[in-house]
Amino acid sequence: MKAAVLTAINNLGVDHLPTPVAGPGEVLVRIRAAALNHRDIWIKTGQYAGLKFPIVPGSDGAGEVCDTGIGVDREWLGREVIINPGLDWGHQEKAQEPRFSILGLPKDGTLAEFVHVPVSQIAPKPAHLSWEEAAALPLAGLTAFRATFSRARLEAHEKVLITGIGAGTALFALQFAVAAGAVPFVTSSSPEKLARAKQLGARHGALYTAGNWSKEFGDHYGPFDVIIDSAGGPGFGELVDLCAPGGRLVFFGATRGNTGELPLRKLFWRQVSLLGSTMGSPADFEAMTQFVTTKGIHPIISHTFPLEQVDEAFDVVADGRQFGKVVVTI
Image (cartoon, rainbow, N blue to C red; front, side, top):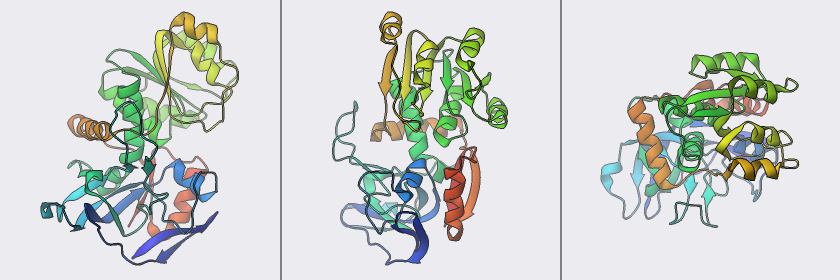
């Protein structure tokens, strides 16, 4: 089979590998489309724990079940499915167990013609989605859904601020908030991305690169019941200032590094909750796919590349040029 193979840090190419075989309790999926996440960029550039080579990257994928292993119902054959990339979550909803891992490292991922996964990791593809849209959904959709609903408990009519709009997970959070009847606001470093977010239902947006943006934005539109962040960094404390009393600040990344000093007095006096979130449980994944189906949500696709141009796809994500998901068709 053809696959994108990372043989060393920053050494990514398309090669031919043996077609995998479905083991006991597994299915073999013929991948039609895969999607990239920042995780793939960090693996490629050597900024991720547990690196090993060679590795087929890619966590997101959609395709058809073409074979089943021992113990798997043959009725899955030919079914169109999406893949839940979170492996071995465990038995508790509150957090993943230590054995939890994500497809694409250490297990070969979806940037290949075929991938084998436990049958528990697949779900029927939402019928209203194209292959590209279906491939864009799993990791970012799951992360956004757990952060927005399972952790922050966003409700209709609450005001929610979503930072860094344009990235796939932030866009899913925006789409989910709109579908839930909440009142969403966004931030970005790009006026064009703010304008596009407003077309998707954001009420207003702020350029976080502008001086004193948080005070001016908060005075006009805040405070916010829920804030969803993936950047962290020195500006994280500004988000605390934007929280309403009893607000929830949920975060699932630290692309800008650790925070500076947190204003603890503001946190406890306003009874603000800081909520860490990572990926999501199987129950979250089922609820997310049902929500997307019921609400008729279509993931936002930024760029589409064939497998042979996978390097170009990685460059788009690495440079932050995308508005939505970058998809690789296979």
